[in-house]
Image (cartoon, rainbow over all chains, first blue to last red; front, side, top):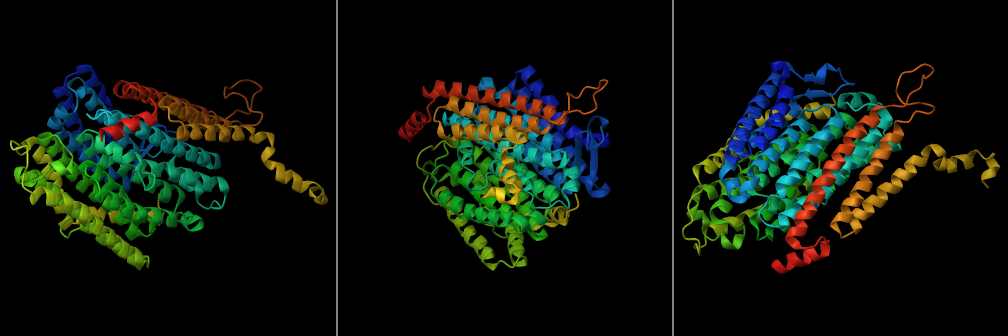
Amino acid sequence: MSAHLPILQILIPLMAAPFCVILRHRDIAWLISLIVSLACFAVSLLILDQVLTQGVISYFMGDWPAPWGIEFRIDVVNAYVLVIVAAIGAIVSLYGRHSVNKEIPKNRIYLFYTAYLLCLTGLLGMTATGDAFNLFVFLEISSLSTYAMVSLGKDRRALTASYQYLVMGTLGATFYVIGLGLLYMMTGTLNIVDLHDRLVGMDGSIRTLQAALAFLTVGLSLKLALFPLHLWLPNAYSYAPSTVTAFLAATATKVAVYVMLRVFFTIFGVDIFEETGLANVLMIFAIAGMFVASTVAIFQNNIKRMLAYSSVAQIGYIMLGISFLNATGVSAGLVHLLNHAIMKCTCFLAVGCIVYRMGTVRLSELNGVGKKMPWTMGAFVIGGMSLIGVPLTVGFVSKWQLISAAFEADMMPVAALILLSSLLAVIYVWRVIEIAYFREPTQNTGVKEAPLSMLIPLWIMAGAAIYFGIDTGMTLGIAEIAADMLVGGTP
Amino acid sequence: MFLQDGGAKTVQYLDFLSPGLYNYWIVIFLMMVGFYIVISRGNLVKKLVGLNIFQTSVFVLYISMGKVEGGTAPIFGEGFNTFSNPLPHVLILTAIVVGIATTALGLSLVVRIREEYGTIEEEDIHAQEDESL
């Protein structure tokens, strides 16, 4: 049993998805998705434990040995990302029932859960697989189901947002395939570890290799919404149902970041960055994203859109950490991957509660909401504090780690820029707090606190935002082991 | 001028015209055509057509790189010793399926957009959205 954990992780949601379609009942579909996502979470924890105690797990699909067959290869890096994705999946499906019933047309709810399970399958598969082409297939499974979920939004603009996402996402995925094709030309293999072994010692100035790196970087940057390739993200997050937004914001872009780390550090290795100067380019875009997206976020009236732009900025922080190319920087990126998932999930879940009770996402209509929904807004404030990086929240841990990485790389101005951009986050978070707490409620006098089944998952996330801000041993510890492995070049 | 060094350089300069690279020129041509259509067309269906051409160019890229000079189809038989590499072909079968799924989903989104907005022209959709703000 425990030998088959890596495949169980993917098979459980994949097999459960058709049942939701066959049974065609929204509550049963919800129950299936809840049980399945909890099972996935349990499996991911077992895998993490197994990896930490026994080392890398290598699982051969159908007993075909690598590199001929497809291999699922799980080391500390993917075990860590698997736990993040599965945990968010479990929390969101625990939360989703009421929100989904309210925001998605009744006759489509069971289809939503089907798409949700398929999306979870795709994301977990992308993370677990050790085969670069298999990764593309899982990428498309998750992307296609994401487009479907985004299009379920109530506003008709959800359709155009989904279409836009589909075009850009497909371009990104195709770029990835082109890059992979060029790598296959050079090496004749698709297994990630095998690719690493064959590329080691190859001259980094070979043009095919550089073109492959360029295509892979641009394709994945589209997927992870690195500024300025983020154009699909604000619309998709704004018009998707709240549950979908919370799930996507915490998982989809994070898994794309993980894939980028794999491509950069495991396949190509650190050396090629010094030859091509790619890290500097990434650093410039990351910093530009931190400032531009945060500034745009300040001027939004739609609270979901504001948080979406904030996501683009936060992805900038993650990529900035990675572009330092030292172990501290990569561990900052990895720890922010988890921390941003926690804080953004908290914020979007809180917004989902607001939408559930008030039916609006316009900041101008949320006067005094903090008095009517104290628990919801309390969690939002914790999420917002984390976005800023206030001590005792998870955001502080990532910022601290990022700034120490900047010092380690001898880049004082970058450290200053990190602090400066955090001030922009203060402004947009404060706008919400000011409206929610310091203005008199105008209309909607009958608004009550959100139901308990939504508040509990929301506060689990908010609690995690504080807990992991104080006890960093687990998160930062794992991130540091993972970062050492990636930068150290051991596949 | 080229002939001064006995023509060796001429060959080098015209290397990109060698027949073995024709496929790759076609790939790049198709890729750019598809990409350009996606960016420049406002009609949502035409955008999907462009996306398809773009994806198809990648299929050709993979299939071309599987070709081994003088190789036959990878089926064992007497007198055949050189085979083309079948793996890229198999990969592309998967990619074709993915492409079909993407196109189907894209077209169904266009149908829904048409139902809601009454048009599939990007400009008209933007105009309607600006009005509603």
